[in-house]
Image 1 (cartoon, rainbow, N blue to C red):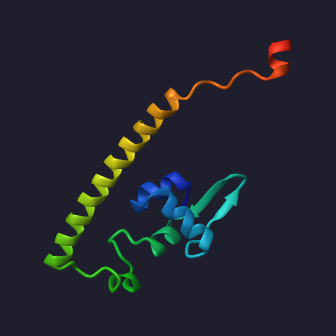
Image 2: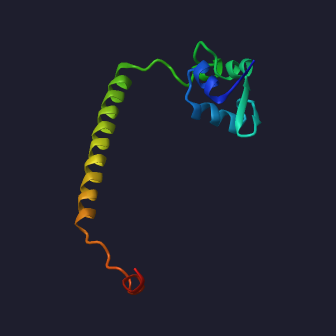
Amino acid sequence: MKLSLNQASREASKAKKTILEALRNGTLSGTKNGNKWEIDASELFRRFPKGGFTKTEEHLFPHPSQSERDELITLREKVKNLELRLEETKEHLSDIKALIPAPKSSFFGRIFG
């Protein structure tokens, strides 16, 4: 059974970007028909088993220790704070841009405009 990129993403519970990266780097095979991908279901589940990780990936994702979980919580908080600061900075920049006067029209703009 052939699946589209969207169907494959849903079936494997992976982001479309993840499926597309696997197609592009050759770890997942598929056929591009025009601008749409066709992925065989058996090939999809070979690369992304329904049960989670493949045997070769299990060693990459051991169960985190308590200190690793605590660090993850801390890092998530830092990311959240940085995202808030970024939004505040964008708002501040927008306020500054509003204060800058519009450029005067050019010589030709005054004549022909």
